[in-house]
Length: 387
Image (cartoon, rainbow, N blue to C red; front, side):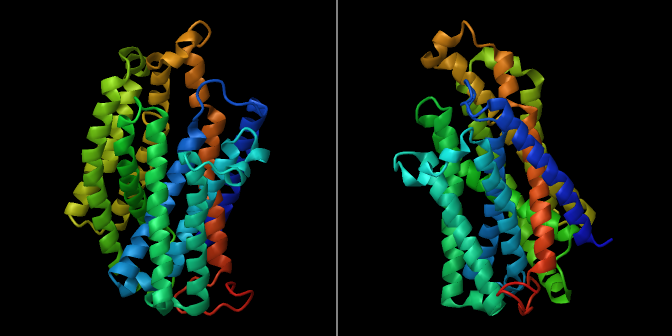
């Protein structure tokens, strides 16, 4: 069985898990807003997929449009499709998280320019639109077209939209659970750094396991990989500094009762992301490791550590802190139990949907490898982009 076929089969199985998680979540909420913990695991999930997708595209845009790397051009089709196939489960999780999906269009029809959430809705579409346009353009006109003015404009436009989305997602998170205003500042920067870290790790994991493709793509990947490993190390170094800043701020205002209620789980999750997503990839980049097994292992650990961090200490703990810290919730103490809020924030149906999102990616990416003209120099034969 080929790697691509195996990927598609895995995608089918995990996509069923995604469908089950989303369906169970919708049945459980019954279309009603969540009682207190508004941002569950699916919010962290769609943010995670958006950052990972953006990181893949950001690196390609910098390498191809700014640095003018030839190897980046040869890999452009696969990398843009990788970014798009990663973004789609994120967008699906956005809609899945809504308890009243039929009203979702109001984020655009009744656009509120003062809302960061509304701007996220626009930026998801803007970044996705640039990525899709870039993919169509490079398949129809070939790799060298990205070295032209139009090609560079598409890449740079996508880069700008992606970074704006990453930063705005971080600021929306910060504002949501901040002591008004001041806690939000580092989260935008943190999310841009996480995008580059996740994007480089995701590119390494997919390319090293599924393969870059034909002979030309393999040669190009060997050169592109050097920059990807370096990028992962630099992003890990930046993460260590910013994570220290964010964690100290988080602990500085989080009531002791909330931190104690999280116990060793909170501490373990923070330590895991520091070690697995910070120190380990930094050491690998510094040592210029080339071993496929090591790179795949490290990239996998980075992705898992960041996902756990985003779901638990970064998303769950601050929302619990709001119950204790903000006067708005003081009147709810008589009937709000912390165990119920934790169960709502870490609902297994949402976590299953997030895990299933990897299946949606695998299915889409595998089908794209089979059906789309993604090899360097490959001419589409049917419907503009198909083999």
